[in-house]
Image (tube, rainbow, N blue to C red; front, side, top):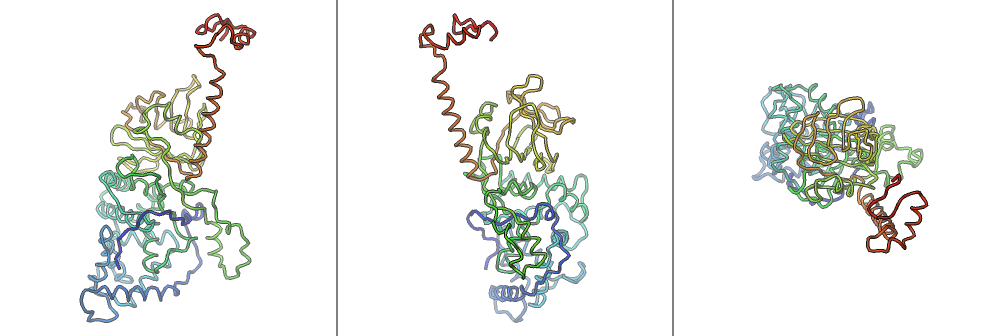
Length: 482
């Protein structure tokens, strides 16, 4: 048994945690965990079998045996989890025991499995990563971010990968969390998570639940896995796996789910199942649709950094999008837009629109739309893309020529723009179908246009224009009101 080995990427279809009640999932219902006792006892027996030498104390595990089953990026987590499990009911200053009994293991496991309240989960993992202290140091927090990332990838069946860009992004998280402080308490961490990354521990708890019980977390309780990135190659894109994880832990559920394939059982009568408890009933009603893949719509490195190319590649896409903006000063921003992009003189965006700074500090800068103006035709307004709430200064401005980026009014060198469509394969195919139809319409229209190699004097369009009062003696000179 080896913990830390990661599987190939698959389309995991676990439902997202609850959107409104479940951003802060709470229940006063007492959940019975006695059903998990056989699974915990069986796991303990498996762990006993991994001992490298004869176990001189049957019914007990040594610290080394427990920790040695954790491999790779999860090795440190094994040490932290052991410490947490043997200190249940003890003071953090007590000496760490070198053995854990089956009874202690089962008791500690049940304590974890009965945590359905997110605040309880956060308190447990805060204490785990703080190693029993009442505060986190910056080093503790960086470990917490790295391990949370590794466990989420594992629970989402994604191979572990982390590069230099991810290290910088994770440091940005710690910088945002601490500011000028050298340590933070639980209240500080909880406040930061509520504002900027509310689901950081979801993947952690999913993984721990799976390991302790030998089965996936109940679907009505499991958080959204990290979505797949279509044709993703690590290092090629502005997006990295670390960024993807953080965005998944921050953004509303609609960016990883679609309404097209919602579980029909959500609408079924629950009175047919008298065994369904009120808590389960609440959770089942809140279950959402399945996780979607994200598809590259526009990448300025591949398609060219210009408004025309941007417009060509993103138009006619009807689902939520994620747009990454990379510019001078190690700045990376994410524009999460929950409605289709539309050119015009009015800002657009719904309640789930967000502007997130990823680097050099990770934080949600603005939330809720309308927030994005994409203007190419109204000459009374600045032309280009402008992001910020109406009546307030724009955070981001990109003039129509894409020559620069204005960050709070300061001109910066624009490095890259990358947009991902969040509606899955069907949405991308629908966009391509629409664009194909538009091309056909353009070609059809072009066959009726005036051509330089035709006899203009015999062209029927000349007579039509003349009837309209337009002088058409020369194809390059259209006077008389045009």
